[in-house]
Length: 424
Length: 215
Ligand SMILES: [Zn+2]
Image (tube, rainbow over all chains, first blue to last red; front, side, top):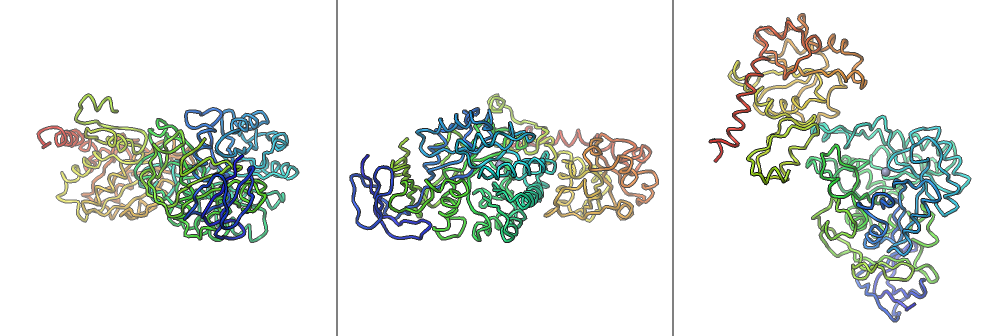
């Protein structure tokens, strides 16, 4: 394999930041310092050279919904967004609730533009009534389990799942939504749902499950990861739980710190997502939670849907929006945090939650796997849905000008994105 | 929709169970789109005919005290009436149990009451909304009987109204639930006028959008 040098950038990782070139050989970092040379040079002037980003929450739609997305197209979108690893959510058809489906998705990810890891379902068929074979999936390397798309409604079953998981060294992740409270809702319940005549989902539907699972994490001692938190109340519950030493972690999605329920006034289903877009106060609380460490990660909840599914009445369209190609610039510009903190939220902190730190998110030093994201924090671009690599087009940011763009992505020493163009 | 538009129609009248559909249709076609009721959202021609019906009896809505009583939460009529009545200067009070009000009234130019007996003597127009039977199975009400006892315009309650106060209802009525049969038939009830005026007002809407009114 050729020697590769990433030249002229500023390296940012958990140890700090410094001007340095990065020499890559045989898939690993072979040197970090100034004035390095190699057979092939990737220009990083003006750029941040960071560990590859890690997405804890992506719906790759395969198997079963290939008209929306495939592992291949999602991985390409991810690489263009700076990700070197994504965790595939299990709400596929069939769901990822057995070793066989884990194997199928891992095989589909072989040779993709980023590493594809899998989250297994907590319950058989994600139906919430019987534990899925977590040990057999854990033996294949699954480290996160979730019924995402829905939360585990039965508190006793969730308790047993946590107890069972604690012996496997895996983490359970919860989509926090009390279905009785959320039933029939299609957007955040509040000022806009009242005005628009759309049935609402109250913030409490999320918060009661966060509160319940904090109690269960305390009871069992098993870690719980909260997916896509969206309300001020949920952020505050996690803040208090962490202060009390309860083993919880949490993520937030870019749309929950950039968009509010006022967007739904257009009745455009591209703004339908679950959990729904919330209030300005909730957006501010999510940002504050990301700033003060209450929330550990930015995760995309990338949820592709074909165009015809989003040309439905708002209350009949499926929830979900694209996220992989826009998360980094949104975090850079909307969080008002130093670039080191932004990269922490998108790279090594989620890598740690997914137990991927051996390969992804680690410091850029000699001997580490060369999984890198090189981005220009100042480059402006306009989101054009038809130019995204995802098979679907349902981005809520169409036409929006973003600042910050991925220039190169390197996966185990191979440039998979060069000058903003996918190579795989 | 694009097919209908290609046929060269001048207007599309949309009634749909989902809120916002006329809005979506209007973004896809060149034709005029008339909202004939969308989900819980709006029913603009009902609001126009309601305003017209009041104007038959009183010269102006400015300063008029209007109580809208009943299931506001699920009512497209209520949403359009609030907009229309307040735009014309009326003072609107919503009267309902909290379970039948929208979760948030932020930005609504209305007063709220849970006590219909307190509101009726101070009201020029009482507008009763249709109460649907399924509300009791959704835990929004203990029973229709309890709703009638607390909010129904019974014969006794109607006596609380001023002599010239009007009684309105968008129809179809559940006689004996939100309105007693005798009250619906009182001279102060303009419910049949609403039905008659609905034809004229909707003709006017079509005339303005399609006929000689269109320039
Ligand atoms: Zn979810």
